[in-house]
Image 1: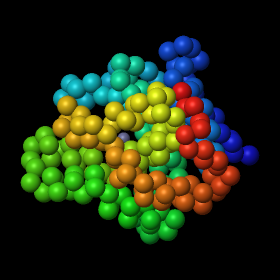
Image 2: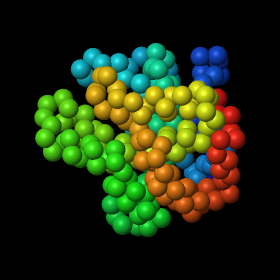
Image 3: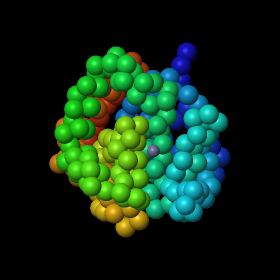
Length: 219
Ligand SMILES: [Zn+2]
């Protein structure tokens, strides 16, 4: 018998520092079921890139550890992003898209390719070099696009002014560290949202999800 709720796939310390973890997982549980995920530990720890820049979150599929930076400005949203990677790793989303056996995601692939944000990255990557090109390549990596769209899919259903919605809204603006926006403007996200919704409805374990846009508090 597989676990029913997404939250059951994750372990973390049950204390006040991890309250946001519990709240973000409760939010996901409110939207879709497990679908048989690998089990992961969630830890809080300051993390840095090779260049010494503080990172918001990190996932290691080998040790099955998600690390969230407790100093991060968008801890909840970052956790949704990392859980997007868990879905990808557990359900083999990218491997099967490349193998051509995820027809339920064809619409999502098209919607992403046609979005203004992704076209803008591609346009800029054509003339970029150095650090900007490196960042654009990371932003265009398919698993990253998947994780960012999953996080936006969940957070965009939260009430205006809820922490998750505020953290998502911050992602529309240009990040001063990278000079790029990471998330899609709401209008640009519409067709991606519709495509993700039909894929989630199709997948086993996700078919009785109830999507109640703007009625779920989402702490
Ligand atoms: Zn990522």
